[in-house]
Amino acid sequence: MNIIGFLVLALMAASILLIPLGLPGLWILAALVALGVVLGEVSGWVLM
Image 1 (spheres, rainbow, N blue to C red):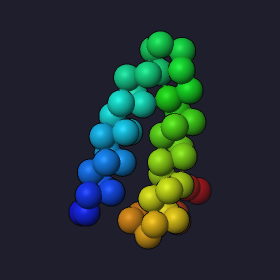
Image 2 (cartoon, rainbow, N blue to C red):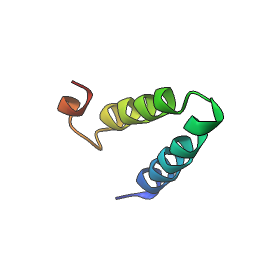
Image 3 (cartoon, rainbow, N blue to C red):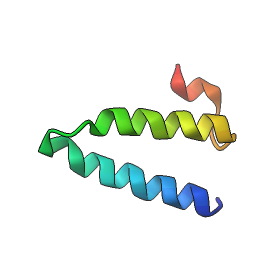
Image 4 (tube, one colour):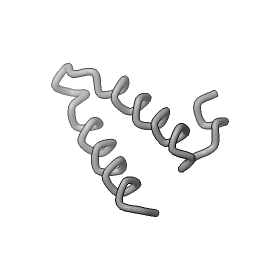
């Protein structure tokens, strides 16, 4: 995993903490997973 992978994991962890505050944490998670698909870090099947 490269530096972008670690950055995305940190952002995913932070977005989970935002959900109880009423912020759109789930949308942030979905956007980060989509970014991972675009960058080729994860398979496209993850979004299905």
